[in-house]
Image (cartoon, rainbow, N blue to C red; front, side, top):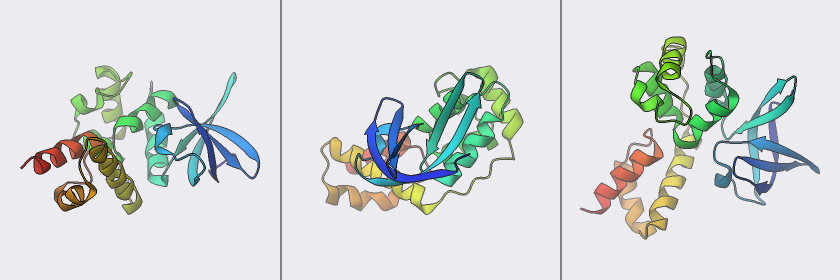
Length: 185
């Protein structure tokens, strides 16, 4: 069983990355493959999914993300592909908050999660998911936010002025909305 890989990203596909670890390439399914820079070294925490007809690796940028993923796949009806998809558009803080506050609407916005599965997630995990948000995840979130705003045409100096006023625990989407409101003033 693998716990993590420390290697160079060789390529990024639509739902996975290839990571070179001392000359051996591993294909790892990740929530946001294009958030990894090709040629750069990363520590990727992995989950080994082994079934009769499949051996897959699912990767995460932080240990907290992996721990939450493991709790999510323990929910009846939740597989690793669906659980991994949650991290593509949601932050750890947002997911944990939604579970603990029974926010079914938030959970159903993720692909392949209907009302029934969202309620099962809340039923199984409410009060059991108190994942600490690491400062590195908040930094990654800030980097993503800066990148999005730069792509929208804002200058780095303008963006850095409004960053302290934006809640880093929000989803990237909500952070962008907050930033745009502040930038348009």
